[in-house]
Image 1 (cartoon, helix red, strand yellow):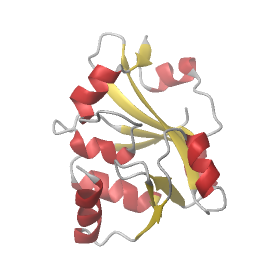
Image 2 (tube, rainbow, N blue to C red; image 1 turned 45 degrees about the vertical axis):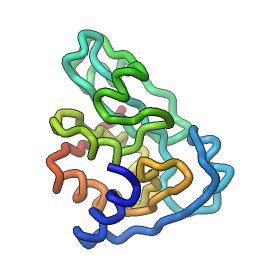
Image 3 (tube, helix red, strand yellow; image 1 turned 180 degrees about the vertical axis):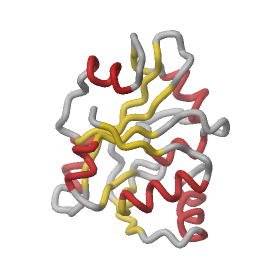
Image 4 (cartoon, one colour; image 1 turned 60 degrees about the horizontal axis):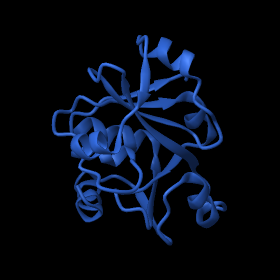
Length: 162
């Protein structure tokens, strides 16, 4: 789904959100330059998989938190995790360039990739900022609304301590 389709989906589901425009950004650090005064949780998204490629996950962590691989492996009941390659990212989420977003999961037609959100991110604010598969925009919405829209399309939203 592109940004216009995502905005239409949000409107159809009566999701309350705020759309912010800014120069294109590719990292959470770049986004901060344009969104630092905004009152929502700022996160980084990590697209990972099990080493055998049987399971894929999209993780959301506070932007300043480093992933604890041991804890994440234990939470996901996996012995080995690694980042997804660009080729796999394009194949699974139809993203040719740029970074992933929770809305990227709307391109996962198999509905097999869960969004795993670190509890610390949710504790930062009731709102979160995510891009609508178009990195010169950010959508600010509540965690509840994000979970609701993903669930409405068959995607799993989980809160974990990573």
